[in-house]
Image (tube, rainbow, N blue to C red):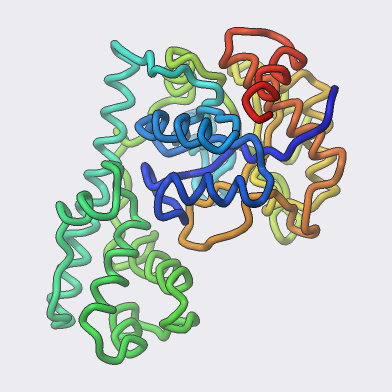
Length: 363
């Protein structure tokens, strides 16, 4: 292979929720940090593809087209087996890599995707209503307008993080003693300074909108499709079903599904999932090299990303939990994975063909 370039294959944009104000900011930051291959990976949405592709062409970047969804494996749920959601047995995050553009999804698969996206928005609308009840009870002097949030904060896909952001913005507009207001609303003082927007939003979400919070609304069963159905949607959209590994947490623990790597790989193959990814800041270098190296040797496509689906702005150039950059081994794995996805997007087969596609775009 030729020179290895930096890749970030998993980035969220405002088409779902993102640290970035817009697509242009995401791509400008990638270009400034020397990240040449960038993957859009929004929840339930392919709406940002045109903007992503055009922005990459202007900046000499290569675009990877992705999507993310949340599925449910009923058998894993019955057995209490935690997959890649450490708090909800059976719940399984899945990505699609290398989806076709122009978008080809149609028929039942398009209907399934539209239905779960609408259900996700309805859940947030119900949370908004409960949050307004709390604001009324606290005599806050303002309410949140769901339609306005959709219009000003989203590109059509509303998530609980948008609620937390809207609440912070409305509170700041009211003025007054914000720390006291937040403490009264949440039933506890926030750890974050009121000037720390990302910290405030994260705590508002945690205390009010997550399980146990006064405005929390559990998802309806309709919010989750079976794993095999999500894979079917991804395949119909021209993509590659991809399993996002959590791998080691800060205490060195693994989920039930991921603790036995050989068994996990075997199960993924049986479920028709030939690609995996890691959000590298979650993991130590040693564990990431072990897991990614093994999975690549087993024939899986392996890529890495950063998500950027929280209010906090972090570097786009990837790093691990215990290092400021990826090791040479990890950079090479990520590059080969990106080349395989690029080959798939171009209707080709090999790493070398995908590499040529990327190099033509970035040089």
